[in-house]
Image 1: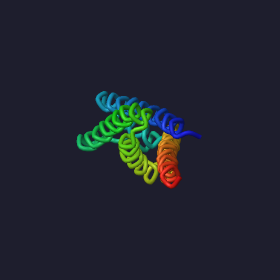
Image 2: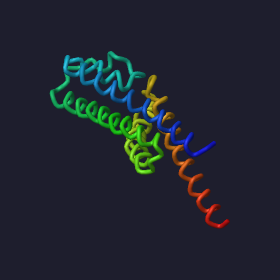
Image 3: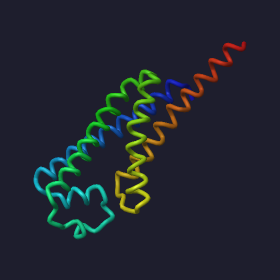
Length: 153
C-alpha cells in the first residue's frame, strides 16, 4: 500500500473520530445545560444503570462534567482539523492527532472500556484512533525505509 493511501485512510479515520467527539461533547453540554446530569453521566458510562446516576448532584459535579464535555469538543476539533493535513501527508499533523486523539482515548479505554461501562460508539472510537495511529505510523515507517533504500542504491 502506498504511503499516500495510508495517510489518506488515517485522515478519514481521524475525521470520523473528530466529528463523533465534537457531536458528543456538544450533546453532553446540551444535556448538562438542561440540568440532565444523570443522563449525561449515563451517556458516557452507558453500561451502568441509569437509575444509579439519579442523584441530586452538587453544582461542582456538573461543572466537572461540563469541563469533560468541553475537552471532547476540543479533542474533536483538533483531530478533525488535523485530518486535513494528515490527508496531505503532514508528519506533524499525524503526530498531533496521534497525541491528542490517542491520549484522549487511552484514558477512555482504561477507565470506561476496561471498567465494563462502554457502549456504542465508545469502543469503536478507540479502535478507530488505534487504526489511524497505526496507518500513519506505518506510512512514516515505509517512507523512511524507502528513503534508506534510495540512499543506499
